[in-house]
Length: 489
Length: 96
Image (cartoon, rainbow over all chains, first blue to last red):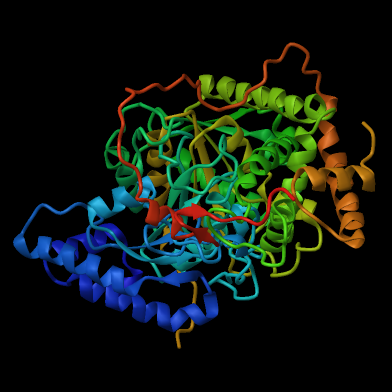
């Protein structure tokens, strides 16, 4: 089996046994990238020189026989919304087209401490606003399972490169489903940890009360290994939670005896593709077969989550994106002769259409006379949505749902209608509003051979319950072993 | 809830430091009206006495010792700026 098809934990064994070196592994990954990237367009920047240097450092450790961390020498891709010192960090936007970050995000510092190898920066919807990568100012990434379809978004580059074997693992960010939805659509594992679990220092802000960094991987074990590396309190992020971080590999138990699984009836309504519902129902049966008890739960305010999200996220975005003014970094329009004009021209030329739409929506919702009707109202409904989950988790350990109502859609199919595109995230946004951890794992293929994702949610800081259920599912099925039939050049 | 007009959209654009041509304003008015119409479904819920949630975690103030520390070098910070003069960010004319 070629190296690019292996998982991080499999590769770690080979590195430790010195069957392969990290440099060989890294070189083989760039060979693979060369073979498939023309079809996928998952990367915005490749960092081969730095990658080979990191790999050589890891090799020294392995050769000395040091106790090496699980991600040492493992080739990882990073979503271009995460600041990487000395490397372009564009956020998929023209306004940051020339932005080289002067510092590393905390997650990068942590990955470097493990000796991980950064292959490059991945494509995304501009400022993480979108569900398909079609809002990138640079390119649309294609889904390795079918090159005419989108990979999901906004972390579509990060999910596509893992699915295509062009990275072993990757990092993305999830504000309304931007890790879980592309993971589902590309047939890989993607996890959004609890809000506060991972430091947001160096994550370019979209909606600060919703954003969270998390991993993409080929299996749940790798997901746990990356979580182990990136989670933890950070004094540089005042919203990072000062709670103990467990060893997430300890909860990878193939057994669900005594575990209660809730099925929220509101997530199985009209609009869910019948093949997806069928596949998720059979996944639930697998979990039941492994010892879990299944019960129906109700999350009565689910239907209001999208409307709530599309007030809160744009409102926060409109404030966060005020910093792009052409003064300190990034793009500046050149024709302006006074400051106000420079701001307006820079922002109007630098931002793409969807970003402007959300800034407009958010500014409107926060503007004088509308604040109570929109923003305050949405914050109140957010409380109701959160209480729904609090009630459900009194009764059950985890909640299981489909991740996305449909499989990957065709490139261009939803770009004309923003509202239709927004509704792609209808099953994922509630977890962001409530701050919950959530995973998407592969649970089948449609008749068109497109991946289907199973979403598992738990109460805040109960990632271990999610990982146990996901691991058990994986041990009893082989959906996670399916790979797209990508022809390499 | 009042429907959004082109004047509202123009006003919001001014607040957001964005500029659009007439065609874009018309398009935004149409799209925002449709999105706001969808969002209007929140009014089906009675939220009297429901406290607002601004944040998923219970936040507390974080204070730290007031100790002077070095930060990034000036050159490093100015390196990404579009225009720099004598160690400062340079911008176009602010006052006539």
